[in-house]
Image: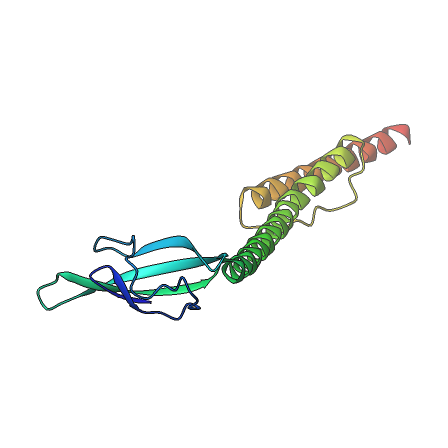
Length: 165
């Protein structure tokens, strides 16, 4: 629809006995506006933008009307797409978080198992954790400790064997 001084002068709306042409609009002001209007017992979503003259005075408005049912259907589709995109990102973030957590905790679990083995006297299995961070430093220290304990036990066993002979 196009208005001139708040009077509808052109419209794409269905015109019947109570047509819109020549009627005054309730849209006023110099900012874009949206509204819901009833034409011929059917709801329409309307959006109006002011038309200004060379002195920046509002002389009319241009508006677009669409059936509220169509507008709602499009809005629902857009919202569904947004929700699906957000869900995909959330699921992706959860997947990345699970992967990162497993990547971080696996070496710690291996170090725990190696420590338990050392405490049980199982000194033949070397610790094979390679990492450039603190976990790697701890693994190297634990491996050195395992080797030292193994060598000390071997020396002790050797001395005991010599004493028994």
